[in-house]
Image (cartoon, rainbow, N blue to C red):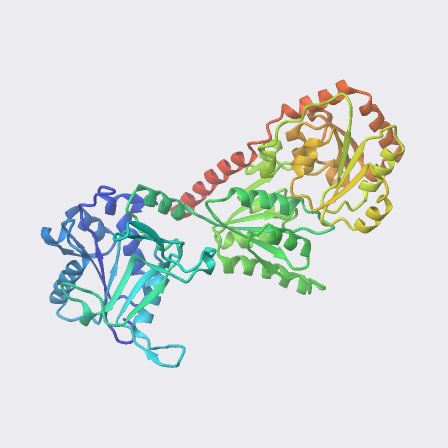
Length: 578
């Protein structure tokens, strides 16, 4: 009941559907189609009574199992040519006779609209029974509310008399600039009782309630069914990650690679306002994000408040799955997430939080303590999309181009260290340098080498695979870039930025890399010596490339997705059993 108005919802469901036979009771997302609208309606805080009008005993049985009363419909009212008006009128009269009272509002909710939200149904009731004001301050009272969806398009009509097509628009504009045009969805048709009669449900003053594209889906054929099934399976995924000059950009770029492959799910990023580099990268890639604030974490108490805010932000969004790509999670943090009922997936996590994560994937690191839910190695590396369609590198006898790329920030400025070594060598061909967003010496290095025609410096590169593929030799850090290089088979020399990178076991000779170890301990002379040995040894470079190409790096996401799907299903079953 809303404002003392007694509200009846009628769900019409006949047995003779043609587009999809028996569709009202076929399983969609694990339950009969009609069950979705029954549950949506029963969850309303305003609906007083719900009835299903049907000519079919099996539909009546299924509806009853999900808590709906049924009205037996005469076979003549279930024929293909019969509109809904007499069907709803018949159900209303029979229900009122049965209950011995009249309703104030009668709402038709179609069983073919399984994605309708209870909140939308309640909003329609409020709009029908509240008094609104127009732009001039005049009161508006609606007699009927119909659900619609914005259907703006460049449309055309047909002129029978002149035998030609004509535009139904005044000017050719992008869709968002066209005047709004609404199409009925069929999901909600709400009218005050006095307008419900055998031939009509329309009142005099019509109001519209706009629903989302998702809620507007009306299942009429198998294509509609497929779309609805996919949407019902869609999960809300929150990715907690960051990027900064200190931690680099690898975490956020991997997270973007994950997000790009979750096309059937809703993805949002949670980023730290104190690390604006991560926000800039995600924003530039047009993904939605929310932020938390750690600026005030100057004391232990303030630090705890900042951590609590992260959990609160996650809770406010209400995800099904939380992905953490932040290197060192705390056990208190992941336990808080687990206690709130989220499925937790962590990447490259060396912190205590792995104790409460459901799955951990570490392509780079080896853990000292084996865990049943931890998967490591190159089989779980996620390549950026551009590397999937880039062809393998063909090794030539001469080295004509050397590429230097030391990650998003290159905190030790290995870029310049290696460059100076190359300039002292016998190598006389092209040198490409790619600077990350977090590289702090951009102006200095550009100014220093601006007059050297052999050197080309790039920033914020979008086609990294192309630059790597065009190189004959690459110098890089021992981070995630190694996997991208290996997927192409370009000979590579690694310098580790820190002690942590020394544990990145992928960058070794067996996989085709020359790893010089901790870069701060490596002299320019050692770099020079390594370079000269590679310039003069075509067979060595071919062997390095062959070993890289023998590694399968293009199925990491599939391997991860398979395990997440399996783990999530088992977790749901386990939750249901408790």
